[in-house]
Image (tube, rainbow over all chains, first blue to last red; front, side, top):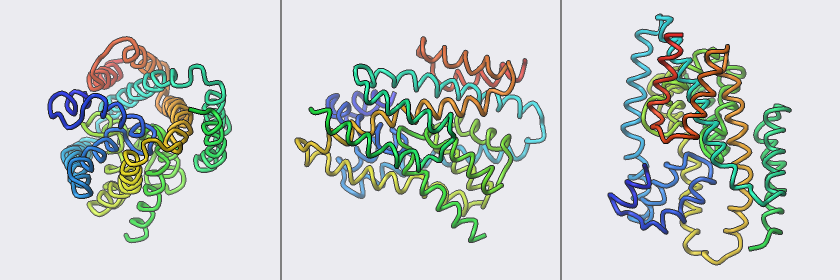
Length: 151
Length: 172
């Protein structure tokens, strides 16, 4: 959906440019769509463009989410709302699972990378290790593996 | 009020840079900080805010705005939002600027190659931990599985899947 808006409708980027920016956009910390909006804003208008782009992206969602939050505050006593939101949260978990599944092909044919990803999951889910510790432990290993993998 | 704002800034500033692969990576840690460490809300309140942020448009990070608002009103919402988007945005801006300029440099490939498995690992972990937190009971577990299957096999708009999940839980 973002691709359609960016490449086809607004023509801010060509297809190749979009694909090229999508890589770092997905792997850098932060929501992909946020990173992309910064990349596009910077490309079209420098630092100011990036700030404007980000603010434009977040303005409406901020207002809407606060309205929803206020509405929740008004009716939070209703147990039906709690059940409904629990269902939404569960569905969201399902969406995250689908997203993770979609990313798995990245590891295809790269056993060392797959091992790093597996260690990450073991550390965070099985061992409940702190996030920062896990990333600091695996980060250098991952860099080494990537460096030795060659072009 | 100010110590709370400082706490919000520190927690979300840190999470901003840890969100490799997107918000799913930091949701479990966010819950741990907000519910267990800071005692700002109960688990069910956190889940409710998570659900509301999922249902509303915009990046999944918007849950942070709700948390900030709950904890510290308008100032809290502003601080939390700025701090969760700020650091990662600055980093992204710097990297993108260098990206074009250093097109042929090996560090580009190494960076992307190093982050890729971590992105996958964090996405899988995030999905597993969020599932653990939300699949309380068989009906919710079924909703999780059905939503995952629906999104994997069909191209439904996320909002439809979320609404369906909510309705099924309401009626079940």
